[in-house]
Image (tube, rainbow, N blue to C red; front, side):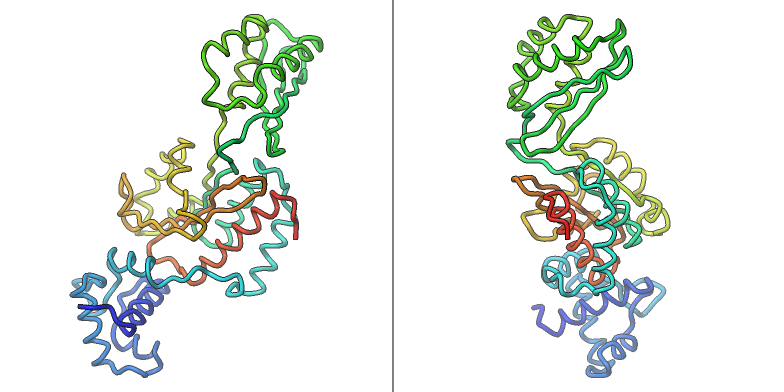
Length: 337
């Protein structure tokens, strides 16, 4: 049985109506939605056909229909066009612009702040990663004495970002130690790809610095190998969603590992990507993740995503996600408004 244009419109309408109140959608409600352009009898026949196709389900206690996992998959793959920025209401656009105008553009600060704002604005959980590029490396190191027993290692990336890590030196640290360490790090660890940090190279760095200053060398090594950092905000919104809250523990466990979390919200190409929780391993039935890539300039890219129920209001939320992704990239690239 083929999916003609009318069946597609009916499936799209049922997804939208079911998102509103979570109640099964009957033919009478659908007829009102279409302003009586289609009769209830016609709609019942089409809903029966969509059920036979596996795109709708009929709960035992109701004559109405709800989208099945297969129905959501079809909807997300075929019926959602890439959201255009023009579909975002002007008041939402202004609100997002005002939020970003008040944020620090440093990626490590902007990403969690923007993710928190996205969650609060949408009522879903939100996630994002700091930007990364395949050839990103450290271009310059500074070592700053912080008190008598600590050193702050600052690393400037080849894209102009700044990473920091504090190392404790139990035997104490002098300004001369800090200056000498900076010279050593700039000679040995700048423009080195993470995969080229061999045990032999690190052993030679520790030998040159001296064992007592090894914690500073290890801190620098961590800065070189740091990948994108993933953050999750708004988990409390998932706790309020009856069909999603059982997945909260799994989700929090995933976000305890940066690599796994980054892969979870990585979109395919430049378009918004939707992933149903039932398609994941481990499965998170009832959940859906929609993600978008942002471009931060200099070849840097990251991901931003919404995590919520499969019956989230896609038509309202996807333009918000799309514009957030654009503004995140613009802010990091120094393009401002």
